[in-house]
Image (tube, rainbow, N blue to C red; front, top):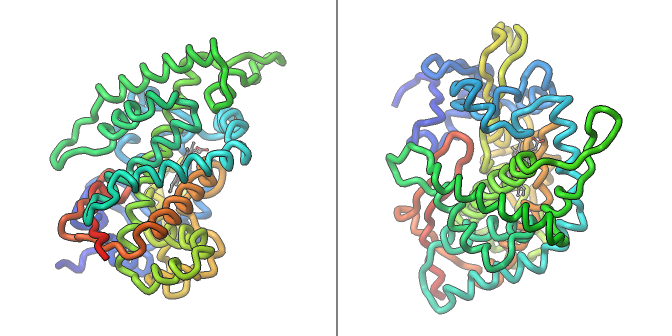
Length: 398
Ligand code: HEM
């Protein structure tokens, strides 16, 4: 043990429980500087919220992932999508995608999501143990994105498997599974071509048909490359995050059986429990920015060009914002949280994520209200952008 305040986002041991360190940062070093990786970090709710809004000072233009900012302009250009943009381009691109994320389209998915959840639980019916993440939490989101985008049913399992390869890395594996990613892009290229010929009631067709400002007063259609960027963004942003929400639900409710009992007794509390889960364990706990001008933060000058990490995961536990923040309470009166981001990049998929979380929990609690987690057999996922679970054996006997 050391008295040093040291926050290394790549340290697996710390990542298992970063909360004590985040608390020390909030209390003792509200502006933290990590010399080794050369980044600043803020951990208090108010700072994370205010910096998220101030995109002129804290830009997303160089990416929102710490190590990607360091990877240089070429890599960032390849990865660029609206998450890595500031206004005015961000607003243009976001409004095009936002038009397709209509409340009608999202709520029309509820029955499909419920059927899917039931079918995954059916697959392990009669078993005393199964892996809650691999069998359930990790399977739902990509299949739901498949419904949203309009991936034909026969292809959904194949696409989900490709996504799975990208998400699950074995310990020690640091290279990115490029092959699976290329296969995925090729698959979506084919699907775009299909939807150009055979429109359907889905998000890809909406994007194919969208009229966008050509910049000269006329309108134009999106090109394949632009369409693929949107589709890849939705697939990437909506997959691992929801998987992690479900994983955190699995372990947090197991560790807090009194809270789980409240949900069993009153399923009407589940939507609030989803918000509380997001606050308590943010699936996407770090958003990175680049500082665009010298700026004073907590009495210190942060020079232009610095990297700034907004610790969303810490903001959710800030005692300045939430009374008794380390207590998980499904009845907590929440006046919002920043786990879906804040300001112009606020998560476009928030309504869908909430729907998946709610239905996923409703079905799990209805079928297996009293699961027990084998904590020693569980495994976390460690990437610099998301925090959650790769494996979670549970026992549902009795
Ligand atoms: C529990 C699940 C989820 C969490 C915790 C989450 C979290 C976030 C966060 C923190 C941001 C802001 C990033 C930043 O400020 O740099 C974001 C943006 C975004 N999310 Fe989510 N997300 C979730 C699910 C989804 C889903 C299901 C989708 C789509 C199907 C989605 C699509 C997006 C998109 C497109 C953006 C970019 C918005 C923009 O740049 O304007 N997310 N999300």
